[in-house]
Length: 214
Image (tube, rainbow, N blue to C red; front, side, top):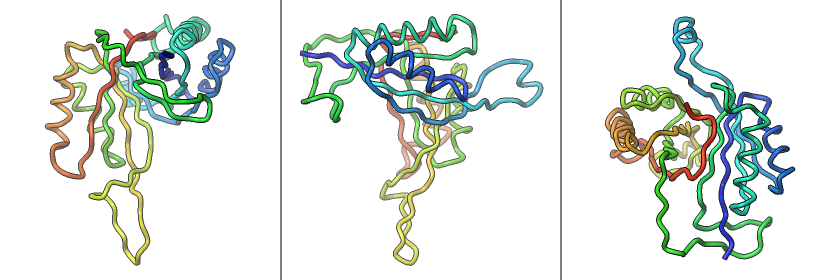
């Protein structure tokens, strides 16, 4: 049975395609680049109020061995060993559907893999991403990436004049140690009242391999 991993690569604006090219050279077929905004904790940037840095998030899917080789090569060529040069990590996929792979692939071996880090995804209305980041930092998160998206949830949908409007959304991605993951989720949920309908959703993915985290 084929095991598939998804590669996430977060780099400064303009370098997303370079990450894709490096991955392609290691056998990864294609990928998608999203624009985002990153936050870093740095006393000099904080003093100057330069919190937001334009980021690009590259997402790719490949067989596990290829994915591991690709993410390692990206980390080497793009100097992720240096702070603030980028972050790359992989997560296991339970299933994948798409034209680049034939058939459906699932990991049903029953093996549970412990993850030192977790990827926390929070989806909220546009403009509330900063609130998510602020709440997460009170629980120990060191930074995040905000990706702009559109939603179509039944609670947010409005239809004036019979014209459907899909509201803008912020997708906030946080990489956190497993031991503080629950605290971060709790802080976000409490601050943004996630339990109330239409306010947002949170989900996590276990990170199997990661580079560029400090």
